[in-house]
Length: 77
Image (cartoon, rainbow, N blue to C red; front, side, top):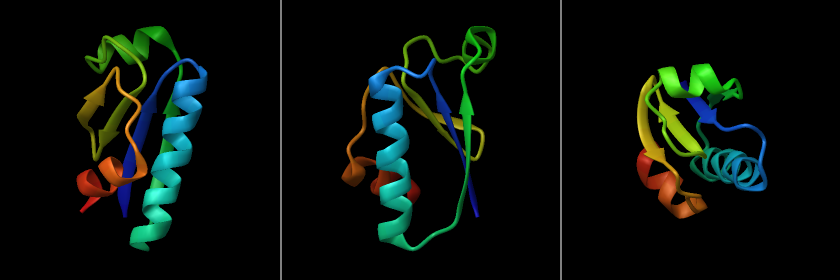
């Protein structure tokens, strides 16, 4: 199981990234544990300077970009 963190305050791009991560996991048929990090201090502490941010298993993979389902799938494989 992959642990996924979405960093963002709940903006439309953050919600879209969450949907894309869920779709990618479904398409790859993998289980994920999804955690939404919304507190500014927690986002900054993770080193995410622009939202939305995406971390997989504790490692930040993207910051400031709305990744497509295809892009997320590549990161999850």
